[in-house]
Length: 250
Image (tube, rainbow, N blue to C red; front, top):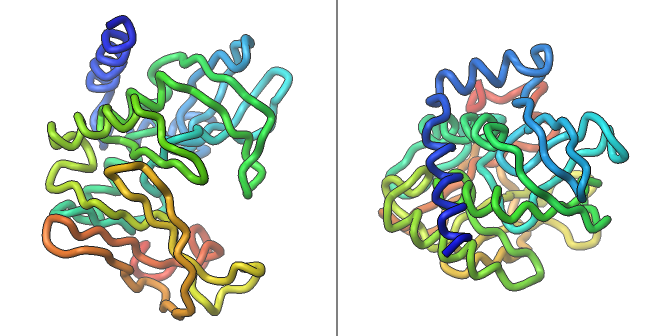
């Protein structure tokens, strides 16, 4: 009961935060014009200032781990580099606005987090911030993301509640399968696993890696499902997310 009340309080706090346009202005103004929103977390017992760069990643700006980027375990937020998502009847522009509003929402409260020392493939410190993860999922600003492990039952319950309420990214449909990462077979540096799609099952939270041999053109949509169960991710090579950006990102 106490956990449910805490989660509800967190969601009410997030709901009271600025709307997407104001959130984007705040994000640009924070950190001297750098992208992201300033906040703080209690990380393994130490309160530290952080800069949320999106809804599931923050950069630690002081303390023992200053300079490290940290990634919330168990959840995945939408991409902020461009209008690349489509979920049910919700289009890329709407989802980009939602994605860019998520960092200010995460920064609106001081969360308690634990760092176990593990890192992801990009070198980001993996951290457990249970209340932050639950609140963001319940608000429809993040989805459950379990890679190589079973998803947290509380997060799945929060996601089912968000989908039933048509909150956030689920406003016009809750596709059962959502692509969250797309790689083309002609990319350099893919390693021995080759090209793959990462697909999240929104019913179980499981993040599955699907190898393939397809070559995608920049700005090509990769889709799963049909109608309200359709979910797409536009392919853009990582090196073009911020430089030499293709037309679909402008």
